[in-house]
Image: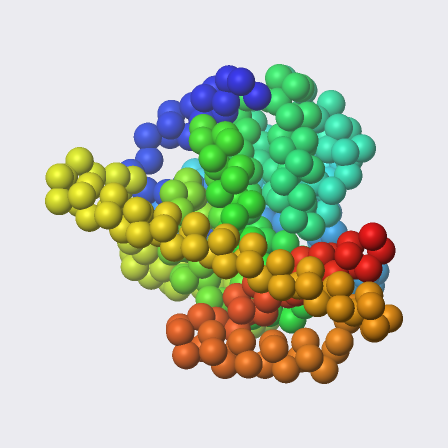
Length: 360
């Protein structure tokens, strides 16, 4: 994707003085509901009105969307409010119907992004379109899979591309519905700085009271916009009720968010920033050096266990370490989630070292 600047031009051409905003209900439920929410959002900073027409559910029997009839409701939204429209597509038939009803923005969901077959089918159906097409990250934290989907669509001569960061599934229980794994979005942004990057705090959090904080973090990391699920009666929504906000709350969120300057030429700022970054560099090097020393100790433990024919994993010892480190981390202002993830990674590397010693 050498000409990634072409993908950004559609966003720049909008001439926005605020981040891109995509908002609307998780699901189109009734024509009345779709139109009411749209009229509530008409005179706000919302740029695209979103509504799920086809809803991929994990298990059958749940509400799976109203289907193609909902596209007619989105047409009425555009006619009555002037808002551009957006919906998710998961196959060629969805694409054909969405284009037939002049939907302005299409996105590919996380469950679809995991399948190159599905992505290619959608890319073929959209070949040469001038519609905006956004690709959500795959369910699992796989940057190559995410970028592969973008490349398939780019190869289909679709220039108005972007990505949506909606978090990643995990078997671990965390405060998030889908853990953000910010470093993957940052890596994508670093490699393709001209690829518009949208954050979906609704699916990351799964809870409406966390949406502001995640949205602010995204803007602090120079994301280009937000997709926030909005419903006039969230508690009675037919899908994902807990993560939807009211139109009034959406407006308040947008007013309260702080838009950071990307940089500053002020000498004092630059001096302080360079100094702090230098401190970070020193500490990071110390961390790596300390971890290297720790693994040498793990090697020695592996050698001792090999001599005595003792199992590598000592569960009681591990649980004791973890408990102590969580308490120690809390005293240093570190969250339990971070300490758990960090020490699980360190512990796994220690096991790998010991196994290598024992097998060697």
